[in-house]
Length: 445
Image (tube, rainbow, N blue to C red; front, side, top):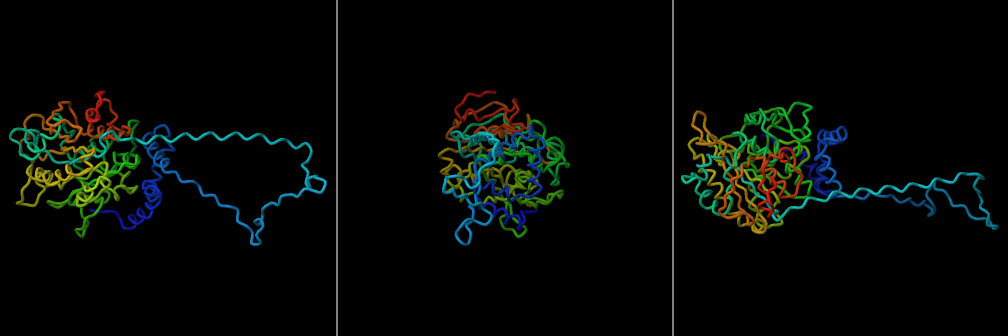
């Protein structure tokens, strides 16, 4: 596992002292990443789309006036060397240097066009703090049914919110679903295999006109944007809180991931990069956002104490063992759904008691994987149907929503809650959204 390098961290920290955090991170970015963004926008002005809009909106939102250097005085207190002296009129009022006869009149200068006003910043609706807890599902009935293996979820929490009873996964691979949930990118051969290596997309891979990256890879090109990029550019705050994310010395670390092309080396019961979808996007890795915002879960309790310190968007992920996955725990220790339920009972009460949640919050308990052991029988019915739960002052208590949702729906709904532009599969007309009910609007799909 690799965390961010010390030199890079210092560069980001220094640049962040400039006005505007996003501008500071852009200055501190690697030459490759910045060149990629600029080149993409220049070479494809018609297709740069959301990327150009987000970068332009970021810089326009934090303008810095150009410094104007006054003409320095000369040592004797007169005009600076090289400056022209104004001609003195003669005693007869005749200019000392008359203009030549027949000199053409200077053409009137065209007035400079008025600059276009900057695009307005997105605004969140009534919900301004979203908390997403991502787990591995034992199956819909095992999570929410009468014989649930997760009594805290199905008993204590279910009655406090709205159940999305037909929320289904796109694939049984956790990283494929969580990448879709934060970027709208569809599964590919590498992500459906669980990203056994930290594999880059082939050189030259570009998004199509809809912002979707085709091909096989796990680490997306710098032009591929995520919900986190959108939030940062719109001046919303976000954090990903990762359980068990530590450096080689066992200390809490940020944005930990393997080197390019390296294999995942997660230890039983410990952190795994596959629980952390934000670590798979160069837009976050190269521009510093992952270093700044992808942090250890031990920071969560402190951030929840005051609304002003609580991010607008919080993504919370346990270790694979505590998410409910099978075969990812230390030998002989408990595993499965009971671990996921225990994780919820530890952190959800803190979220529900937080001032930010009480004022304008939404908690989404969602599943991103199916922890099925090799050779075992999958759950009855649709194995990808896992359900999800919405708890909020704006959600119906004990309600049930039967519309078919999926990770693209989670992405699109998050974009709509914060008034953001829809990207990739979030913009697909077939992608359902649960945001209208929470915003008090009529569903348009």
